[in-house]
Structure formats: C-alpha cells, structure tokens
Image (cartoon, rainbow over the protein chains, first blue to last red):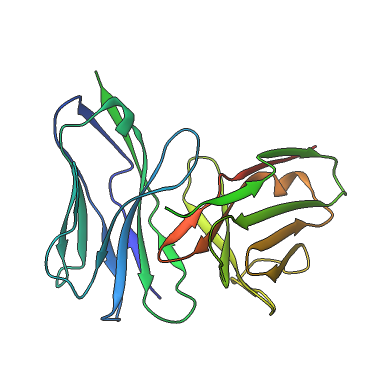
Length: 115
Length: 112
C-alpha cells in the first residue's frame, strides 16, 4: 500500500523568509501524481501545487516550488517570501494514476508565519 | 478552478437521529466523489469512494450501514450518518474529481 510521510508536525518561519516542508512517500508504481494541499483555519482544502511523476522538471507556482526526487521518493515544498496568509496546515498527497484515483494524505505540517 | 459545494457547513443532531450531508459539483460533472473524515489536528481519512450509478466502495473499517452514500447524479453525492452517536462527531469533507480533486467546504457534525 502507498504511504505518505511528513516528518515535521510543526514548522515556523519569519515573514518574507523561505521555508521547506518535507514529504516522503512509498509506492511501487511508476505512474502517479503528487500534491501539496493547504488547509487554513477555515478548513477548506486548497491545492497548492501538483507534480506528475513522469516529469523531471520540478513544478513551480509563483512563490511555491517543489523539489521532486523520484528515486529517493521525496517531494518537498519550498515557500519563498513567506506571507502571513501562508499560515496553515499543509498536507502532502499521493495519487496513483489508475484505479479509483483516490488521494493518500500525509499527517500534515502546521506552518506558523511570524511577523 | 472547479467548485464543489458541501451542505450544511455545520449541524448539531441528537443521538440516534440521522443526518444527511450533500456534496455538489457546481460547474462540472463528477463520476467519482470521495468522502473523508478528519479528526481534530489530524489528517484526512478516506471513508469511501462514491461512483455515480453504482454502489460506493468503502475503506476497511468503515461501517457501510452507518455511513450511507448515494451518488444518484453526476453532480450530487450524499452521505447519511444513520443513528448517529457522539463518537460520530467529526469534520466530514467531500471531494469531486475533475482534472484535479476539488474539495467542499466541509461539514462539522456534532452529535449530542
């Protein structure tokens, strides 16, 4: 079974600084997707960024970028120029490209942004 | 992005009663929807996969007779918590898959 591990229960960063959230996963599949979701206090799940496993290039969305290391099964999220609105729970998720395509989530990292 | 609407946002019910939660995809059709449960300060736990026109697929350990799922149309899935008890109190979230999985706002259920 696929598993997703986030080893940092909590992280903090100063406003305008950069922070990296870690995620590792375990799968025997070769065709899959990886995601980072943000869950602010409102608890609405928001997609931050996605990465297709077949793409070697790391995905980037404005201040958010990933470091995808397929061989190491590592998928970290870098947030640059952190803003107060980035404070939230961040969940790493895996989806096999096939079957029901359900998401498997990590336990989450709570990010605090200090002014 | 696509919009998924979940209703109600919160509900309080008496022990022994049933509660229905709706999940609608507003601007796209979803043959597959997912229902999650989230305990405080924990991750999302997949309860079941809802398929339009067929029976839901439940994850191991989820009581299908307690958590009834109906996916009668391509834009609507419902989760009914039957004979609710205080231990069923939780945050329930649905998602519908278009190009990506889009999530509803969630429903906070409190059983008293």
